[in-house]
Image (cartoon, rainbow, N blue to C red; front, side):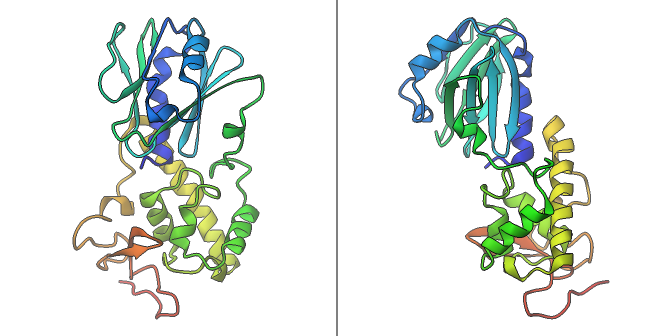
Length: 274
């Protein structure tokens, strides 16, 4: 599942079409990705209209056309945006093509868990406005984090960080990275954090989100060296901070990597250090 930074990178793929009008719209009307919209209305409305902007929020992208048309894309597990040469013929799993003078802006999704939405209006549509504040936005505050932890006090931190209604865009690898940097065990209950631990969690959430956007989001590359990302899936992986062998287990229904060297188990002994 693409996370915050991967979604931002995908958004940039269609930037070649900014300021250009859509001359042709090709889509698969029966595709499940259009389950929340009328594909024929989308086709009629976008033809001849200029792509004026785009924005990513969490795991979703919204493209603006003209002054009042909104095209939303949720990539799902396997969705991706692409650009093909002008005149490109739609292929299998390619559910939407918008042709411009710079090429065809396309959306493909082999497993069809993604979603395309469409709306007309001067104001943001409900499905876009409902996305909670992003981690890097001014609206995401320490108080908001504390409130989320209090409301889900019994949730393991790993499960809490994956809640898109609280932390839009955070996925499996980002959650592991944040907790490792904050020195918090993924099985810690959200309601057990003290003020200092909440501060660390808030600081590392922002740090990881911003760092991922600068690296992965800007160029499609990988996070910086020294991040847990580089060793979290290696058998016998070593914690970059403590030199202790990493542990992998299921927490909150998701495979999770953590370091006994810096993330003490709930109620256990302090972490080991070199």
